[in-house]
Length: 268
Length: 247
Image (cartoon, rainbow over all chains, first blue to last red):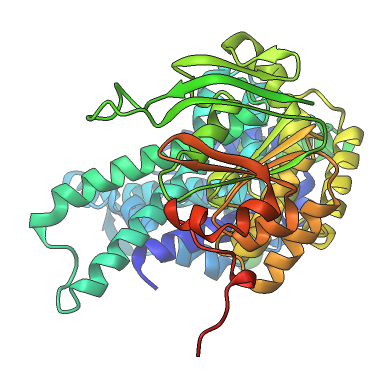
């Protein structure tokens, strides 16, 4: 499969995941959205040398993946492009932060600790976001944004961008396939046709988007997805789920759970 | 529901370089529960004519009335609630992630409750004979299934008239047969633009032949589709079922 074909497949696979009839998928989208944002905020708030404290925050993605029956391997495969970028962010820290730190008789630079902390923060944030989009459809996320009083025009933009993304990729896929079939010995697209290919892509995408918009207009769309999430109700279990995680986040932020567990295990 | 066109002309630009009109002085009326075939060679103006009826294009001159409303910007919401338009390309029509969501799009926009929406969706799926596809994802459907879902999305609006642009295009024989069965089972007014003359023969009692933006002929389907000379003069051929097979 071509790279664009793979991208389309993965987007569709994420939608399939988000539409499963699974316990986590039925949690109110606003609860999941607030928890995700809250979790990322807590993770980011850890001090750059508080690696041990930060490690405790692994509980949320791990528990989330288990509850949602998500495959961690599949997640890593799908995030194979993003995660290395996230991890690269802290790579320069060891060169600038050279203060020596002793850990169990081993002397390392403080920059290494801050690098690992930064990498972990990024990874946790990405995993939490993955957990959200793997259990919540784009429509539900937009509904949560509406409840948070994000301007409707922005919510509509997000929703339609999500819809048009696959169309755009579909056009790219068709055009590159047509090109490859008539240029079998070439790797990639020759730079001389980049201009016309991009121009064609733009025109075709505009046409297709226009037809979709017409189809929406003909079925009563008036610029507003007011019904989004009209059938979703906030239930008691959603509030319990949110309360439990909020308490855990505060606890994990205030108490170095991993350190305590280590002490209990090692008896030190 | 009646559809009436009086002296309607339309051109894409000042729109086209030549300035030639796409549709010229068209006048006709479709009444009640008629089923009308709109035939003509490529570029005859069939799709343009359908788009004029739902206000996706605006006529340069003449008047179009859908029921009691003239096709004008201020009446488009009422008109579009009564007319169901099925696009030639199903991928242009279907934009939600699942079949249910796509069928529920119109009822929700028209303020139905979730219970009413559920009923509308179930009824439309049943009419189209695709109840089993209710929770399927659109991107996993075959071309034939997408076409039937496209029609069902319109049926969920309970329209009084259906406008179908090349509904049988890219369908295999079984799906095409299924489509004909569904169309014949619907009592609403239907205008079907198609090159598939065999399908027109089976679904429409009246046919309008367009060529170069003008109405060449308007009459009973059987009469028009048996007239070899007329069809060939306007870039068409006899329906396959009427052609002799030469060996």
